[in-house]
View (cartoon, rainbow, N blue to C red):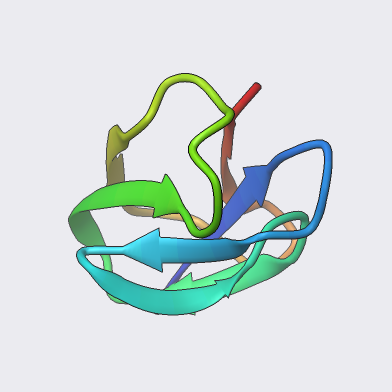
Length: 68
């Protein structure tokens, strides 16, 4: 398993590959590889979507992305 941390100024649902997978500002466990990431709720953030490739992560060292 791999780990992703999506940072945002407030708590939102994290949508990975069109499925809700967790919340912002919390480590999310997922299968490694390429993923499309966006947030739930009102689209008041940039970028509106991010594509990431996740591998060789750990729960204490997740891949980190940020929406602003």
